[in-house]
Length: 120
Length: 120
Image (tube, rainbow over the protein chains, first blue to last red):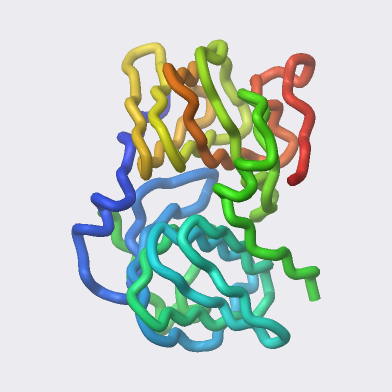
C-alpha cells in the first residue's frame, strides 16, 4: 500500500515562509506538485511547454497577463493557463496562491532560473 | 493557440446547484477535471485504480475514512488519496469541496453508478 500523505492546511503552510515567487510543494498528485506560494510584484513573461499551469487564489488578488487579455483573479478564483501560452503573473499587494504543475516543471519556464523544488 | 478558459470563482459555481455527491466540472487541467461538489452524509467505500484523488475543503468540514485511519479535513485543508487506496468520504454537515481527478474517472469508482460528467 502506498504511504499515506498527511493532510496539509494551506494557510498553515503559508505561515512557514516569507519569500515571494518561491513555490513550496505541499503534496503530490498524479505526477504533479501541489504548491503554495506568496507572490508580490511582477513576475516575468514565461511559458511552460509541457504543462498547463493551475492557479487558485487563497487570499488577496492577482492578475495573469496574457498577450491578448488580462485575467483578474480574486480570492476563491481559479484559472488554468493552457500549456504553451505565455503569461505574466502580477500581484500589486501580496497574495497567497495554490499552484499545480507537472512535477519537474521549472516555475520560471527555464531550468536555469527556476526556484529549487522545496517540500514543506 | 488553445482557447483560453475563463476564470472560475468556486463559491459562485457552488451557488449554481444543490445536489450532494454530484461533482461539477469547472475547469480542465492536464487531462484532469477540476470539480466542485457539495457533500453531506456518508458516501460509500470505493477505490480509483487509475488516479489519485485530490480533495480541498472550500467550506465546512469532512473526513475521509481509510481502512487504517481517518483523515479529518477542515476549511483550507488539502488531502490526496493515493491511487488504489480504498476510501469513504463523510460529511456530518454540508461541506463544499474542490476535487481533481483524471478526466473520465467515475466518481464512485464504478462507471455503472457514477455521476454523469457535467460542466458548469
